[in-house]
Length: 275
Image 1 (cartoon, rainbow, N blue to C red):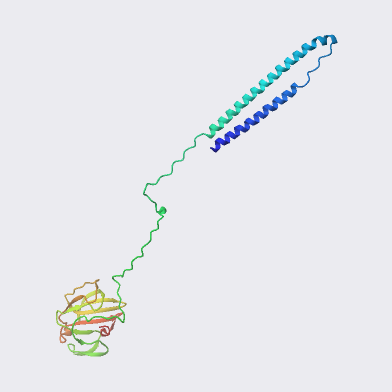
Image 2 (image 1 turned 30 degrees about the vertical axis):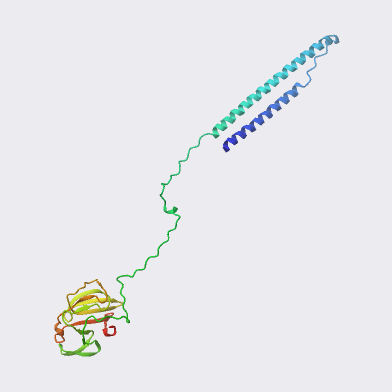
């Protein structure tokens, strides 16, 4: 639309300039025609008198014819100029109205499809639930443990002085406690822990080593029919196995459970932790 207006304004200006030019030419030619005609050499007064009316008539008719011719020429020039201006205006309008190359339409997104950056609704992130790690072990100096088996202590923990062993018939230090119990008595887990090793020892027979956490370990000896496997997390009070026949090191003491508590591989007195 703006280009059409621009073409029209240009055509209008050209038209006004052409009309001004034509009017100027017309005034100039009119001025020339107004000049007095050249005087003819004098003739006799007698000849001039009878011819005077005829000359005036001839000059009058000639002036009128000349004026008519000039007006026709000016009119024709005006018509030609207007036609030229019209043609120029049409050419500019045609150029302005030439169709532009249509730009390809923007790709429309499928209804319902929404890109990640267009998402306006903020989703509130739910806080992650804090769950306890099932493999995490915890044990300290203030922790309490259960009696692993029902029975009496027949050999106490003693690392500051030696005690007498009947079967061995000697005195020696003892890093654990020995609890008397009939064969087949159930042995329960004294404290929650992870079974790190199951092995057979010459003195303690089938033995279970269990990690309690924070550097603490528990040792269960003189077992049979062990009910746990290496890698198991065993809860406090769960069945570990049963009391077995004593090894040759405890033949006189009779069947029993060998129970030891370690802190960083060094023995500590279990009686300080048993409830």
